[in-house]
Image 1: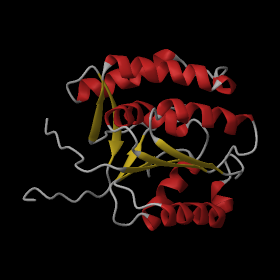
Image 2 (image 1 turned 180 degrees about the vertical axis):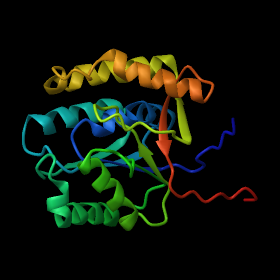
Image 3 (image 1 turned 30 degrees about the horizontal axis):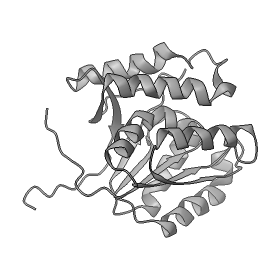
Image 4 (image 1 turned 90 degrees about the vertical axis):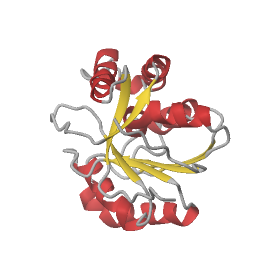
Length: 215
């Protein structure tokens, strides 16, 4: 297993179509990064859920998932499940985020995610963040769209457990969902851990990656 460090990592962008996408997809990675790099800037963008209970949940959750970070969160009000019909608004939101930051790492949904909102956002991100490392996170769901990832961030058992605890604590509006439970989140993390010779991990797709092995 080849391990490459991220080098300088001072600014991170995390984007989600819905409140809880970022926490589910990269909650463990954010905990790992922010604890290792106090003061790291995290610019987070969520396209739907603004102005209500979901936004309140998201703000409290991401504050917990980014301990000690300079967190800047924007939550828009696009209707859930309708991103393709609001393409211009979504594109403008992503482009506005790009004007605010030049990140070292972008965490976004996977381009082959079965959910149209996730997939649409994933396809918008590279149009604004053209020269950046973009890692596509995965979200377990009914559609059965999990693939074969190529990039892994190992999670300590403590971090994996903390991720699950925070998900359960901060998103009470989602607890009724059949897939929203400890077994689902830890189970996927355990499988990804097996794939990279760790106990737990989060996994990503990287569509384009430039190496500097001689630098």
